Length: 124
Ligand SMILES: [Zn+2]
Image 1 (cartoon, rainbow, N blue to C red):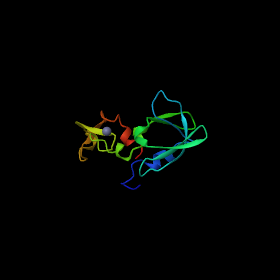
Image 2: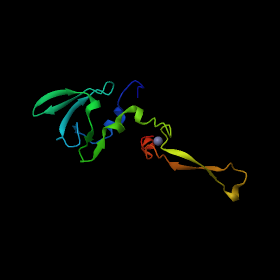
Image 3: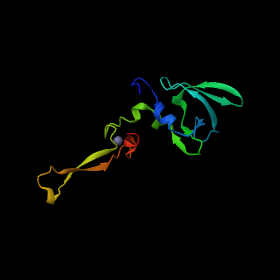
Image 4: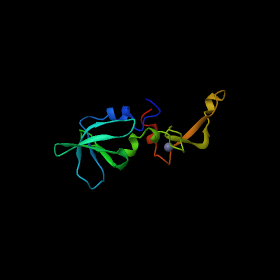
């Protein structure tokens, strides 16, 4: 994955194709023809005519199984959640001590990241 890419090709390719895309949650779905992960420019099939669109105006993608995904999760910087730095979990401030294994360092107790709900860690 190039760090200059706006979108994660890996995540988009992981979906069952073909994909549908829509601009607003209330919009009809349009078939996604192709997408440039570097710029986010993509083409949709609007009643047989291909239309070029910017990804920033898109709200959701639907995969071939009918699962709907918010567009924001496909952005490469979505992984870099400020709170958990993409790990999906944060240190709770407490450690778990295993009394039988005193010679081992305590295990840090992790909480699901409150910022991204742990989604940053989904694709690791
Ligand atoms: Zn997070």
